[in-house]
Length: 167
Image 1 (cartoon, rainbow, N blue to C red):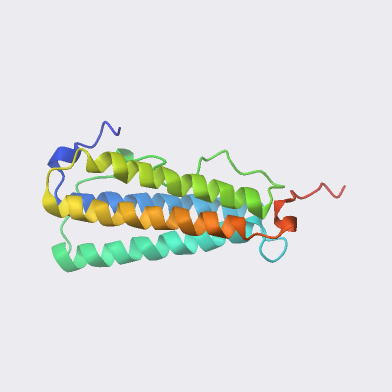
Image 2 (cartoon, helix red, strand yellow; image 1 turned 30 degrees about the horizontal axis):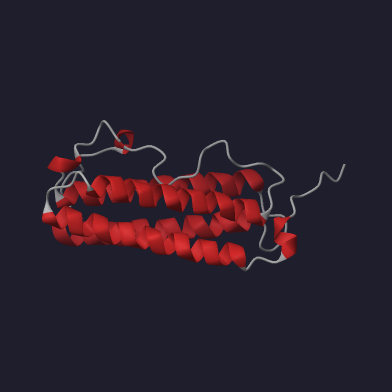
């Protein structure tokens, strides 16, 4: 799964740190995509990524507050190198002309990756507090998958159309 992480030995603090890193990585990737695409019109692909960046940041902030309440300023024992592309969309997956529909498909794929990560991690976790946290995060990712799927199903037909080169 992730060779740098021994899930059977995780403490609750480590698990929170990993979850924060996962959300922060997704925030950074969605912010990158937003900046790369630039805003062209309301509800365009960049708008999808901007909303996702805001959501990921909010979740990272909530987890950070939880960590601080439980562990104060204790040093972080895990680092960014421990995770890669857990929830963040693939780096080369954005195209300049992508439709909002394709942006949401990418978001859905990312939420499914995060669900699979927590699903797999749960099978290796021994600590009951870590298991409870990862179960909660697993359930949240499942809810995100349902929400994004519903949103995709409700998109208007024009949201499926990629931009055309105007030159």
